[in-house]
Image (cartoon, rainbow, N blue to C red; front, side, top):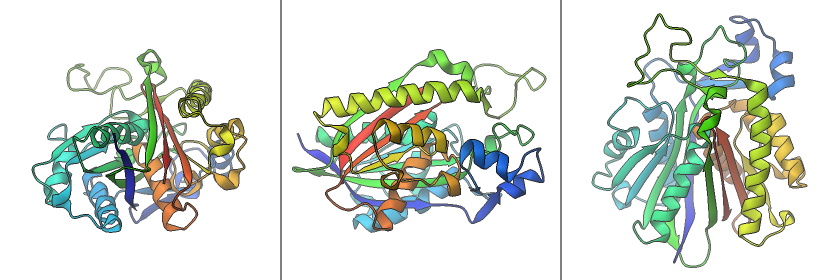
Length: 323
């Protein structure tokens, strides 16, 4: 059984930026209030007419270019998103056609903020079993289209963006393991109430395309479950926490990131943090952070990386890889 190895990364952020001071003009909040609770200073927003697929395409092109892989060489495209362009076809299929990679398998994965880690786990299995030789994995979101701009508890948190990686089979090194979990019993703490089959009408309570969240409870469960998945990951690979070179977490909240780093006894200068500049980009946050870390030269070949994420569902997961 081969490993699946990351041979290229890419990311894309829309040009439009929304600072905390900008938000203070449209909702009762302040730069200090947001930074103290989340660590966020600014976030990017897709402009009118710019879709999740548009962001995914830009990140994918950059990842393919970094990998030296042509779109027609791809055997698989898996795209993590909770904000697809349309209900169907999948955004992965739309991306596939736009890239000119027609014929390979292409599908979306919706695991909220854990979407990229889930997509990476799926693609890893395809490559390891020989079902795919080269795979494109994308996390892309336009979460700002799903916000209630009167709700300061949620509208200050999210931003738009996309990140991508290209995987190939390797006999020696790559993704060591992935660990994916979910518990739908927590649905009521973080969700969007709109669906095709649930029959919501516009005059019903809590209707509308928006994020509903009980922030304090989400925080408590996130810290607990991320602790558990870190332990699971290390145990599955027979490793001590001191073996990890870099933590690349989902960028939801600086306090959650700091809690996970503390659990690993890892100094914050070994943790990739982008939440201050990107906000919570959901499925896009981990690949965005990974691409930034690699292109800046901080993460180097041969180093051991721990990726982890937590999202609505609840879903959570991790990936341990030798870059």
